[in-house]
Image 1 (spheres, rainbow, N blue to C red):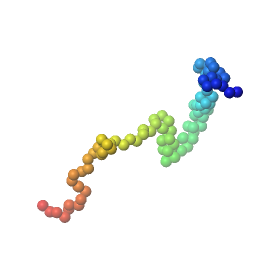
Image 2: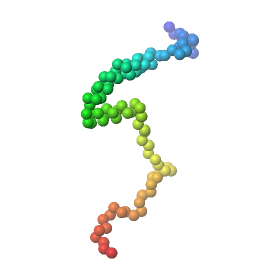
Image 3: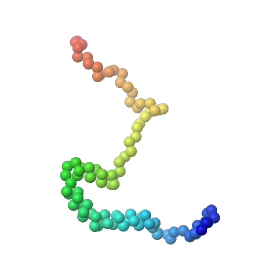
Image 4: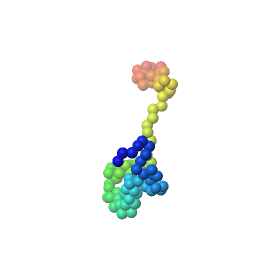
Length: 98
């Protein structure tokens, strides 16, 4: 069935307050994770040791505190914010005596 531009098969649209299928699936998954899946998750986390535990905790933290994007700070027209040093202090001056 072809509709004219600006018209649809449901002119009133979705019922107010109803959720789309994707949101319903995410809610079902969330409920499983917070109820039945939580106990299993805790058991699995307790079984991890060392680097595996740390890596899993790090991965989980991103759900609660997302990583910040890295930014590069530059001055006008992309110039450096910190000027180059005038004196090279890295040179070996130990052979000079006062």
